[in-house]
Amino acid sequence: MKLFSVLIYNVIRICLLKLQFGSRASVCWIQRISPSCALHLYEKGHLHIERNCQFEAGCDLQVHGTGRLTIGQRVYMNRYCMVSVHGSVEIGDHCIFGPGVKVFDNNHRFTKNDGASSSIDAGSIKIGKNCWIASNAIILKGANIGDNCVIGAGCIIKDVIPSGSLVRPNCHHVIEPIRS
Image (cartoon, rainbow, N blue to C red; front, top):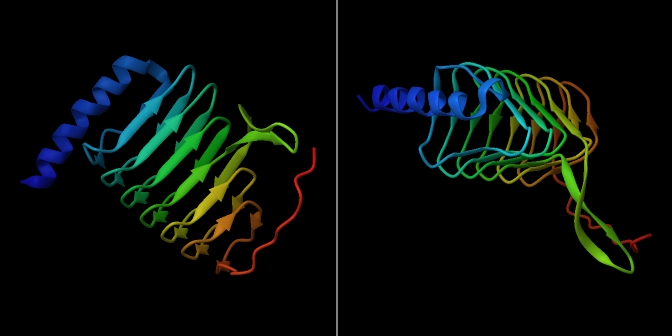
């Protein structure tokens, strides 16, 4: 009975998304999206979600400006995942996200003299099919994760990860001066 009520709730929610955002919100009807999962489209952002995805409580999906978020079929996002898109984020089919995973295709501009500003630099992120992104991993602008990868808990990813890779966190910190 609970699954049925969740599906009905999601059909109504998807109807409202489609009415509010038109073709900018392309979301398949069969989803399991927690009522406390936030789906935000700002300005001219686009959201595309394939069928049979599940987003748990506290997830926050934001698409800003002319950004594009594409999520493949049967993607699972555990509690408190966040995806912030200003450029482009693609998530392949059958990916699993642990609790607290963060995905940011953007970062604030900063300089040595002025510090951080409110303006941002946007980029892109691609996550292949059948990937497991473990708890509290952070995926940053420029990341390109191949198919069938495991990203360990707490990893910070900003580079190319070849298909079939296991990435574990490295506990060494690199400290360098900020360059203008």
